[in-house]
Amino acid sequence: MDTPDGDRHPPQQAGLAQHQAEPEWLDSEEMDAWMALASVMMRLPTELDRQLQRDAGLSHFEYQVMAGLSEAPERTLRMSRLAEFAEGQLPRLSQVAARLEKRGWLTRRADPTDGRSTLATLTDEGMAKVVATAPGHVTTVRHLVFDPLTRAQVRQLRDICQRMSKPLGSAC
Image 1 (cartoon, rainbow, N blue to C red):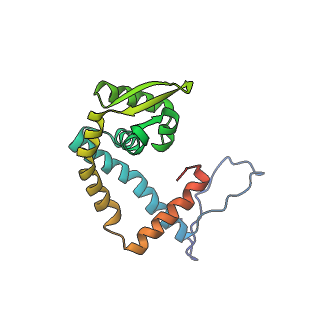
Image 2: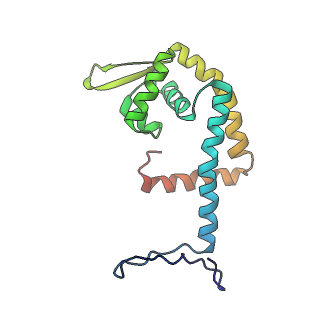
Image 3: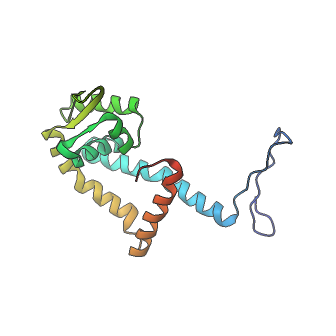
C-alpha cells in the first residue's frame, strides 16, 4: 500500500509475535524493480519452454542439459556437475537423463575414476539435436532478452546477474 510519502508498507500481518523484528520493507523503487524482475522470472522460462517444445520437442531444462554436455570436454560431465550447470537437482536430472537416453541423445556410465559417480555423455545424435535446435533457441533468446537492450544495458545485466548469483551460491 502506498503512503502519501510514496513509500510502500506491508499489509497488516495478524498473528505475528510482538518480539519478531520488523523486516526492512521495500521502498517504492525497490518494489517496482522487484515486480519487474518477478515478471521476467515467471514469463521468460515459459516462453523459452514454448519455443523449444514447438520447434524441437524439448523442455528448456532438457536443452540446458544437452547444451551443457555439448560444451564439455568429450561431451561428458559427471551428473553432479551437470546438475549444477543446469541449475537442477540430481533426482530431476536423473529423470531427464533417462528420457534423453531413451531418445538416443545421451548415455550414462559409472565414472571409472570414482565408482560412486555417474558420467553423462552426449551422443552424436544428441549433438546433432543440439546443433539443429540452437539457431531457433538463440533467436528466441536474442528477441526476448538482448534485442530490447543497449550494449551498455547488456553489460549491466551481466554484472547485475553475477552479483545477484553470489548469495544464491551460483558458480557463474
